Structures are given as C-alpha cells and as structure tokens.
Amino acid sequence: MATNTTTRSARRSAQTSTDPSTETAAATERQTALAEATETTGQAVGQVADTTRTAIVDQADRQRFRAADSADQVAGAIRRVSGELESEQPGIASVVDTAAQQTERIGRYLRETDAEQILTGVQDFARRQPLVFFGGAFVLGLAAARFIKAGSTEPANRYQATGYSRRTPVEVGTSYEPSMPVGS
Image (tube, rainbow, N blue to C red):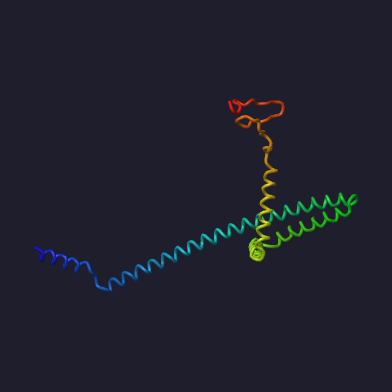
C-alpha cells in the first residue's frame, strides 16, 4: 500500500510540474503586466499632480492680484495721511510718504511677478537666511492672530470672574446671580 501511495504522489507531481520554458514565459508575462500597470499608475498620478499644481498656481495668482489691489488701497490711504501731515509735521509726513512708496512697490511686485517666481524667491531666502525667515514667519503669525482677535465680534471681556463656581455674563444694566457660590 505504501508503494501505491508513493506512485500516486509521483504521478501528481509529474502532472502538476511544467517545463521551465513555460514557467519563464509566465514570469515574463507577469513582469510585463506589472510594468504596464506601474506605468499606467505613474501616468495617472502625474496627471493628478499636474492638475492639482495648476489649480494651486491659479488660486495663488488670484490671491496675488487681490493682495496687490489691497496694497494699492493701503498705499492710497497712507498717501492721504501723508498729505494731511505735510503742513503740520513735515518730517513725519516724509516718513509716511516713504511707507506709501514701499507699499506701492509691494503692489507692483505682486502684479509683475507670477506665483512660481515668488515661491522660488521665498524658498531661496529661507535657505540663505533660515533664522530671519522663521523669525519673520513667527512675527507674521503673531500679527495675524492679533488681527483676527481684533476683528472678533465678541468682546474679550464679556465674562468676568465673580468668585463663584462659574463665570457669568455681565451685561449693561443687569446682573446675574450664580446658582451656587464656591465652597457651598
């Protein structure tokens, strides 16, 4: 019976094994299919990346023109202040006029330089002067936070500490009694 089992196993392995040329052809087909799939995937990723990059550059260009318009408006306001100060404080008016000129230069730069050139310039500066770049980014972040906080519709001092377990709103002409004092 043991010989019978061995003979069956030998027949099965002879039937399931293939010749080396067939195995090589199958491996080559798999490699070709994998290479084609990789190439197709790479092309699709490249197209998505190009589309995304184009959308980002378009958005950056729109923002660049909006920033240039804002810079022009600010420069106009600064010039008006400079004109008003001219008769009373000529020294200060000169400094304010210089600020207006610099603001106009910023607006002109934003209009004449595309977003990719601006990004390249910022990257180059960050590589040359990393401490100045990060310090400037920090200061801009603080300024933006102050600007956002100043534009908030809810006053910062709306709530005042009352010495009770919770803070209560304070409104003009009215007072609120907390439900329970601290320590009760």
